[in-house]
Image 1 (cartoon, helix red, strand yellow):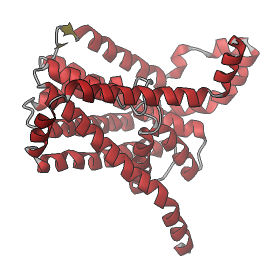
Image 2 (cartoon, helix red, strand yellow; image 1 turned 45 degrees about the vertical axis):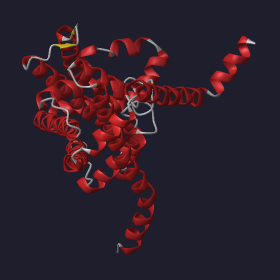
Image 3 (cartoon, one colour; image 1 turned 90 degrees about the horizontal axis):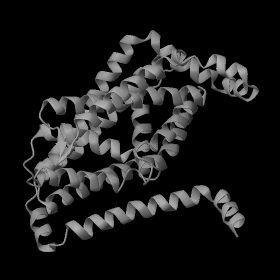
Image 4 (tube, one colour; image 1 turned 60 degrees about the vertical axis):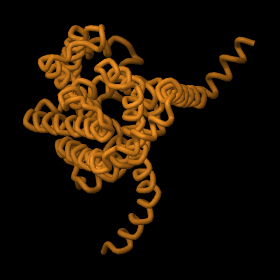
Length: 335
């Protein structure tokens, strides 16, 4: 019986894990609604009094986010002699946001971006993936930096739980990983790979990835620019959360979200749900309530932000469906 269960799991591993993640996301959202939105009349009143203009502004920050992500990505791709326009990459980023709502963690769309850029630019998947890794890593470093800034702004705890040590540890680990990724030679894995035949074969497969990551050492100015773009992107997300909160009458300062957003984003990256849905919303409510926000408003804010993410994802899905049609049209028109 045990062998049959193991065999069944191996054959259906992807389906089983996907189902579990969907169940986790749905369960956590259901839990949030059931426990935090008990007063239906209060929910209606808050929604009626919400500021539509601020909600639209919150949504508009995602447009800037798509553009700055594409621009950051393009900057890194140029180091690999890849010439794709910001407009083309913006479309891919938008579609990636659609896949973020379908794949595990909040970085699931990066899988699509990796394949799409590889196909369009005619570069190896390993090169495309390496660029995405560096791009994402710049985002992690910027988030860690914002958290350090939040400490200096006085946000040192969530409720009674001190956060100084965890944030400093996360910041230091982020910097160490960033240094190792860009300087893989510091690990001196060459000797280890040469000792074993199976590692030598693996080394051959990873050689292009190694060369791509190592090449970024020669583009220090580019890396600084990419980090600046990541700071701008992170701020646009912070601004989006703050505008959504203000639209619902939540009085937290913008500085509070410099602390809230990176923490929530890190939690959303844990691969236990679909697109970070569930852990992101519940963690956001937990932190906001700890800062004195009413449970109902905090829950509505988290669900409103989720709705915006889903809405942007739906737009990305529509673009994904119609893009092949327009690409065929352009090929016919091209001389």
